[in-house]
Length: 110
Length: 115
Image (cartoon, rainbow over the protein chains, first blue to last red):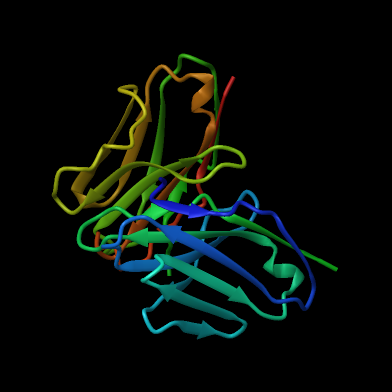
C-alpha cells in the first residue's frame, strides 16, 4: 500500500459546483498534513495546512479523519481558476521528510 | 521577500554530459529538499538536507546523482553521464525547520532535457 494515495481524477465540474477530494495515508503515526496546489508546468504551492479540528479558508475547507486515516479538501462555488492539481502531503513529524501524494486533477468547466 | 531560487530555469544537454543544478533556499531555512517531476507524474523525492546533519539520500535513483549543500545554504544537484530518462523538472524546496509540521516552499524548478 502506498504511503499516501489520491484519486488522480480528473474531476470535471461546472463552475459554481462543490467538489471534494480525499487523500488516504497508511502511517497511523502521521502528524502533519497539508494541501498543495500545482498549476500546469508550475511548482507546487501551499494551499492550506490541515488541523485536527478542521479548518476553513474562504471557499476551501480541510478536514482530518484520524480513525479512517484520510484528509479531505472541499471546494465550494468552484471557479475556473481553481483548475489545477491538488497534492496532499503527509508527515510523521519530527525531523522527517514529508510524503507527497501524486495529486488529484480538477478541471472547472464554464 | 525572496523565495527559493533555482538556476538555470531550463537546461538542454546531450546524453552523457554532466549537469549541475543550483538551489538557493529562503534565507534562514535550515531544511532543503530536492525532488524531480516527470511530465504528468507526481513528485519524486531525491534528497533532503537538515542543518549540519548527514543528508537523507534515500531517494537518489542512481550513483550518477549527487548533491551537496555548502555552508548550510546553497545546494547543488549534480547528474553525471546524463541519460534521456533523466529528463524532468527538478524542484527544490526549503522549510524553516526539517520538522514535518513546517510547510515547504518551492522554487520554480529547472526543466532538464537530455537529447
